[in-house]
Image 1 (tube, rainbow, N blue to C red):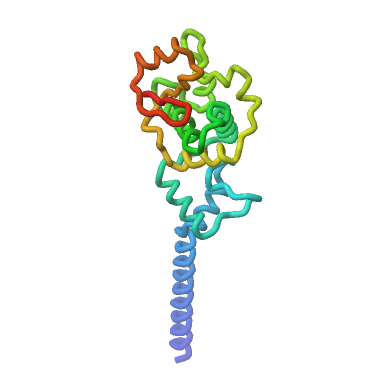
Image 2: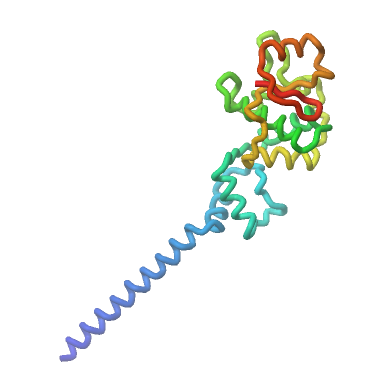
Length: 207
């Protein structure tokens, strides 16, 4: 008689234990799929990169910023190493420091368009420091010294971050030039060999 009660009690305790384990697993699975947890894990595991969803003092983003991160991941989602990010912001400042935010975004877009095009090198640094077969610098500030002298502004950082987050207004442009400073011979080559897309600020953009 007592053995039956003991067996029933043991069976009931086993049922309660399994139920508790299942509830715990459900809670863990729920935590794992929440955006906040995924973001914390990705920040902890990923190499240090500078992106537009970085926040000051190492603090994690909250609420709306987490949603922004998910949207950016679904969009263009370009991630650069610190070195590549520094190269991109410097060349944008050197080439378009006097332009508005969109003008700076366009220059950043040209660099990234080249990275994604088979006719150009595969990294930001190689694109920026590339020379043509004749030895002409593709981005003259990289060799004139201006690239190293610039102080990158907050507006340039904002422009670059917006492009890295997926805001592309370049229309696929692979070249840009300032007709005022480029000289007639260089602009003649642009006009004869490339497709004009649009002008913005002091630059003309081509494909």
